[in-house]
Image (cartoon, rainbow, N blue to C red; front, side, top):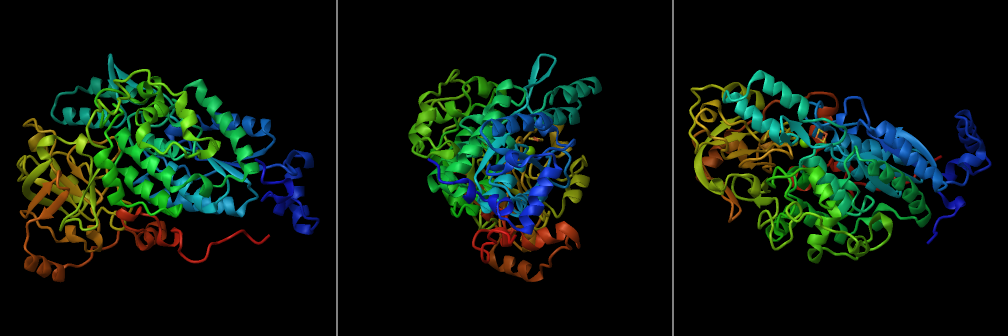
Length: 576
Ligand code: FES
Ligand code: MG
């Protein structure tokens, strides 16, 4: 199905004309050591590599990029590696989310400004997946996503350790005095023991599963562990396929259809997905011109059972087990009746074809619809006078006794304020108290740091409590758990209702009815609203300043207003 010819390749605008500019471009390729026949009339494939020495999850990318190049060359393309912002999850403070849109902008601009006919996007660590995909959707050249793959299971003294989740769990035990220094060091060394992304169903695994289910990867690629040699073969496969995609002119617009987005959302629900997925999925869909809303996701959440028994929403297993059980294709096979299997994805072949040969090797890990881990999906949307534009919670990850809960609020205006108070053993809290953090949203954080799993106050930890109702306009890590209401919109910093809540006010959550309210009467709220003043901004210059000016609220995906589809005239191709 060839649609492009050498002279209609995008890169031909740079290399083909007999003019001075093109002479310059060709001579610079020769400066790199290439003969004309190496690159002329061939698809130029940009390999956008989000590697850095501080991105521990992408430690294999310097090697993997060679596999991709091998595939590109074998298929008759010309590969060029281009470094892109690494946005690592572990070290980037205050939050990697502050830089997702920077990566999205960089991706879009890097593609647009260079002679690229197609791109391989190498990402996986949390924000790199949506960042790369959002930018590439807008840039519009054919693209394929290469997921970094999960790391191997963690181990310590015969126990399996899961990224993030077991860190939180054993930290609470340590605060309660139950973990020795030696054990703590052992856990530290055992919890992350190979390259690859977090191996729980955290944000990384959720987002790569979403990219896979949306048809942006080779089918099932997202589940392959980073350290497995089939990951290398998947890498060269991406290189081969992208060259064909260029000739077929298979742009993101032809891949990311409404049905593909819906499949991705259903799969996300069935995996026990990270709450972060909501924000990213909405942002990605909107870039593709598909108006996916929180209500759509809530609706899918209500009817899609959680089938992947992978922590933290599942009980027992990790991503390595998920792969051995058949991986994402096996999961999609279990829920096949819920999916549109006519979608084609980057392969150009219907999903039904990939699912025809998929098998489930362990149906305790990848459950059938008739025996799910949890009868509903991973996420629920709340609304009420505390969150008129929505808030999200992960019902399966919280203690059921909080599903309907009423209690007095204990409100913190900032993360440092909360941190300074939470270990005070005289803090005035009971197990019914509702912990609240505000000014931690998209503009207020800025970037919605992952502060939403507020620590249980030390006074209660010592009494054996491990969960409480917590509410914030922040996010939480995909590996977190507990009764945490997140992404409250509109956020406190811009005067959303959270800004009006006071310590001692009664808050009521009714999860079955999807409501979250403060029981404060409207007159009193009006008085508080009139007296409210906006807190000082965290950044008064630079990226943080610009971010706060332009980021949208959580319910619409936290993209920048001026990057969204439909803002102004499309940038179009560069003048050469
Ligand atoms: Fe990279 Fe978790 S830190 S995926
Ligand atoms: Mg994370």
